[in-house]
Image 1 (cartoon, rainbow, N blue to C red):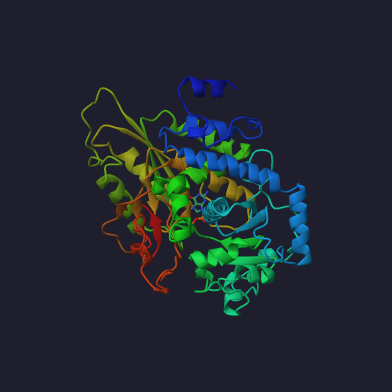
Image 2 (spheres, rainbow, N blue to C red):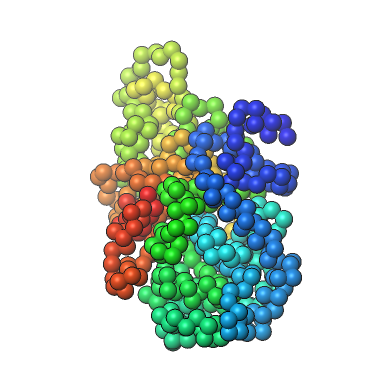
Length: 488
Ligand code: GDP
């Protein structure tokens, strides 16, 4: 309670401009209302429209969520395999989106944020599959209800749904069970399946990608249960669908801050993770004049002197880290010493050790003191290990609290950090061969938004292949993944 009072006394906006609702239990989730105190960057303000939409969505989650009569009824209908609708009954009151998040933590967070936005746009209750630790790392985002899918969910095999699942939207199109071009909605309503699986895994077919077209959205709208699997940030794809555009403009007048708002709304570290974040922050980062985050994601592994050179050249050329004097040369004394705290995150300790020794063994040209820190080095990426995920989450969050950020291209881990922190990072190009020096080493990113790695290349209006980076003004190609799409 003391720290919270301190927070409001020093003008921190604990509700993030109305993004968060007041009055949720603080003891069970310290991070929710304390996070504003830890960030020096105030972040973006949500639109009033977004704030009111979130409050309405929370009411929907409470009205239709687990434990309600509406949920029981909808689950029963799914169990029976029957379609909800007789002719002319239209869309049911409570509709659901089950989101399956998988792969690394960055992927899982981007998937859940994407599913949430889709749920908001289509007035569906979002329920997340609890496997893969999705029920263990975060606080509940919605007041008075749970976003975790109950264990008695009737579709028993849903976690194994894949590109081959017969009930996937793409496969139902292929088999002509569904027909998006048909305009006879009433007749269609009779034949709608009880559920559809939306396969937006990185392994997806052209039919699966029809999800991003308006006509297909009109069919999906009336299906009561959708199960979605993705490992990507599909939001730029939603901006391509004309049917969502007016609503998206109102929700996000600044389209380069969509994940920034969704992420800060949804993902509050649980108390254990928050302890890791705040203790580390207070001990190593809080006192510095500036905090520099460096996220080193070396795909495939070994320590590479060339990647080290890429990191230091990028940071020094862009003025994020000071140059050093030749060994043995002493700097002229400077009166008010500034300090930088560098937070390195990586699976390996090697990069951190090298950078740290540079600033220990040689003086900086600016006279600044540079402290280099790395919370953990887990050595190998592992799936489904709890303490591993806990550290990854704490480190992503710590990176988001820095003042300037260097990330590794292609990494969803870095995307989450930059988006939560409201930071437009310097992104290091991913080397095709880690023993080659990258020149230039990095580029300032176009925006803080994550990149959608597997977007459609199809214009729904002309029904032809098209460069989707050129259709809508705010959807552009990413700098790290040339065919990817991001909001700017
Ligand atoms: P991506 O593979 O870079 O897109 O990021 P993901 O977060 O989806 O998957 C990588 C996983 O490897 C993370 O979730 C962590 O479990 C682990 N990992 C990668 N880099 C780091 C790091 O710097 N620190 C920690 N603690 N774990 C990491």
